[in-house]
Length: 370
Image (cartoon, rainbow, N blue to C red; front, side, top):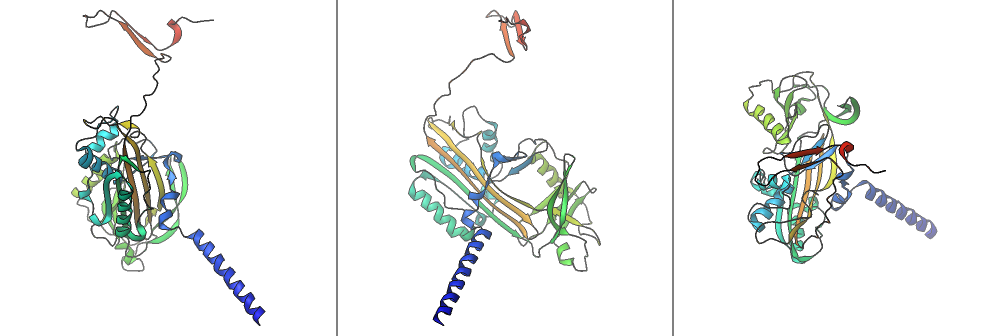
């Protein structure tokens, strides 16, 4: 009998261990989410931008999230106390200095932002604040090399917009891109019945404007009355900002009246899901040129963004870190090699125009060697 009980407990213990192992594999802990982010450098057809006002690249996805702007604003307003001036004046820095987006456009409960010297006490303060404010939805603990000669501007944003009732999971949707059709997961309403089985679902969609099956704007209604989820199938403008402005203008000026789905109409939306980390290399390793900040360099400009849209709702978690460090970056060794097309001209010092000007585009007039 004792032997039987012994084997019983062994089997029970084995089952518990197997369950624990399987559970660990199936459920990602909140603190592991950002570690599993895909590096944006591996994405061939997706670009990450720190501002809205960047030109579209043909055929490329564009992702913008305001956390990086929030961190930049802290540097600009609380540390440098003027627009940031960087080596070679990258366009992104000029656009970020305009502060198109500020914290006043966010519910204070949805974000956390802080600026301070990179000391153990400051990192502890950040991590405690994040855990207290967001609980299980806080990002992993912030860890950076400690340095009294460095400042960290940090921002984190969390949004969880749930629908009142989950939409239907639909058969895969054929998404067309450059004459190639790809099957993607989808959700929505297979057939609207305003007074039937899908009546509750049709109340979660509002048609804001409709000018044809290739030109329309809708809103998905979540449990958060102050939040908007807008989807627009429209022709893009030259930038993400201008496209948004055009859509927003249509929403504000339209007199469209058929705002509800009619009997038999369908709604199909592709599911979206990504975890991406991105380094703004165009801003990193550039020295500050602001008065009093000579010798300080932006050594880190990173952003992590996780977004998911499915039949249950939309979830966003995004983290941004900008580090300014007191260190002179070594000058790159320069090269002056005219091995590509170039201009040469000769002129007298006081003359407004040259008396000889050449544009060398090919070697036909160069002296060749055997």
